[in-house]
Image (cartoon, rainbow, N blue to C red):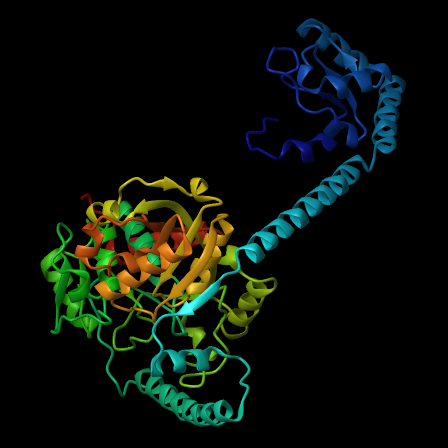
Length: 529
């Protein structure tokens, strides 16, 4: 009998009477004796057992194994054992005795390893907590208006004070009305009363059920690159939030050159176009319109809807729901009382649930997301990702070339910095800096999508000088909104952009296999580009 599959040999040992350990007569080295010994078999080995010399010595000293020097001796000893039932039985008893005497060694080793790992993780968690506590900084909200006051209110899980309770009571009443309207609108699409349009390409939607940052834009970048690498022509369709441009179809990038700046296109669309020079990026309120334009003018085969989970007007082939593992489902209330865009039961539409920033999740958060998703969606794939810091790039270098080299993240450890951000989840950005060992003296928070002016940047520089920091650190989303004159100015304190990329982890293999199968089924074999 010849076996050619890895992992079968251990199960087949039990069928033999005499076991010869292959590879032991040549310098390759033999297999482990313990496997056939566990079956209580008479064992023959060659004299090349250097890779298991301690085990071989144990069996040889107990006369529990027959050692041969060449093929002739192997033949002789094999025939002898088949003819001598008593000797074969003795060898079988001795091998089993050795196994029984040493039984539990793996368990003991595993126990020691578990204890060591637990101690290491405890020390690691303590060091991380000490580092975060040591770097706990004063976060200042730099623009105070009704918008920021409203954002603070809806993010609170508990409301204190009579005035706030009254306001939130009114918001809660409106959230009940909002919930009914959302359910009614979705039902209209399901019943066919509202028309859904279709595109002659593969449509992927990326979105979430909460307002705020969950990592949609960097995930869209990662997905577009992966699809491009598969040989398909992809285009990204963005709604152009906070864009100055108005019209049906706006071309931020044609896949060769940028056609708009950040102010015209909006920060997210511009950042996508800057990161993806080979992928067309379009903005417009109606994705069916921008999608048809991408197909007709750029030959798009795959349309990626950035922030498209609620864009029910367009049929899609795959719905990817992003859930922030740091800010799980907000405070559990719908708008305007909370941050949910639609009821949690609507996650049953998702084909994929992607948990983002799992490395920053609080204990129990990942399990809670799994349980919540599975309670509404039994079939969807669950995947995890992290936002991996790559490097710190000087703002002027980043502005000229987004792929420019920078300072390794390890070199910023211990340096005093001022963090500045205008993103949906500034706490995650600040935690990333703390995890890198950066000493944050202060964090200046601006409202999400805030357009920086020269006055804002002058205030940032003044604050940095007052605090005596060594550097100012911003996100890539902030970098696209810094005025050009400020970028080109010679700052006394350097400003760095923290370059971060999404890294898919658990579940990515199944996801990409599924994606490849579905793309091939709808579009045929990969094209050559």
